[in-house]
Image (cartoon, rainbow, N blue to C red; front, side, top):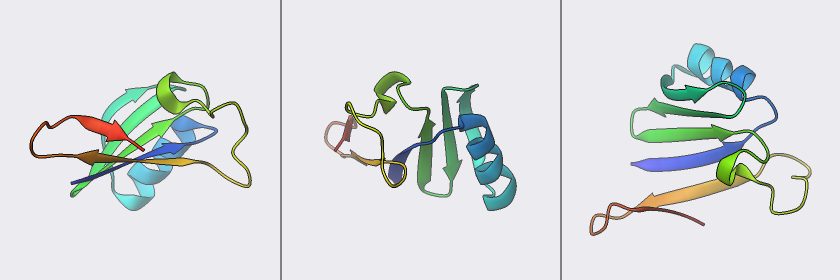
Length: 82
């Protein structure tokens, strides 16, 4: 299973795109701030800039959004972001 966090300018518009055009299922949605979507073995987390851990580390993502990859280990089942 793979997980990707994608920081986007508009969570709701992005959610609609992944759900309606790419057949992702919505697991969780906090309008305007966060969404968790799933398709097969991929979980996609959408975060607004500055929402929760979706902060931009003091800068603006240029030229485009930043990604975070999360690994799930069998021993701990804890999620870590890099």
